Length: 147
Image 1 (tube, one colour):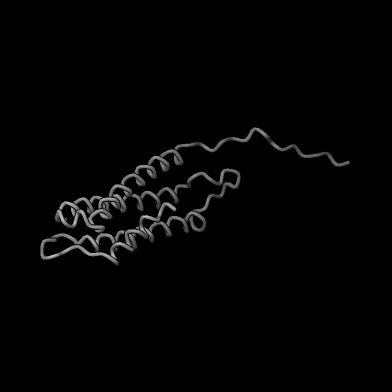
Image 2 (spheres, rainbow, N blue to C red):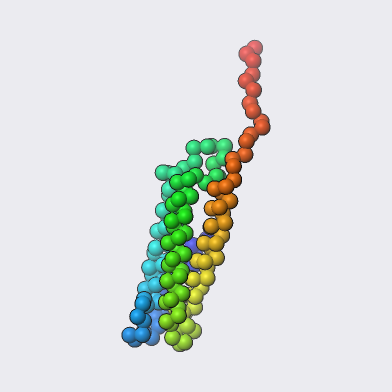
């Protein structure tokens, strides 16, 4: 559900266009959305797969805690996404007024805002998951005596 904006960005990038001339010295808005959509989907899939394979938690009682490997991969993914959102700010600054009112311009702005919001939430979640100590269980099991 959280990645729906990535599919929307790809759909809008492939079905719409802005009147482009040689005014984009950095990156065209449609190309920005295509690279961002596919790139963010691949980082999302990578972080999900590594959470359950390479970097899975060995503590089965506290399975929801973040391991160091998961935190490292998630931190790299969030950093790359944040850099791409900053690049989007430069792309949006070059968009013409007519293109800003088109679906491409609105999606570029939405993509940047949603990315920054999600990344802030991910950094907060990552910080909490890495700093929380696993709860110690007070319900220790006692071995039953044979009859």
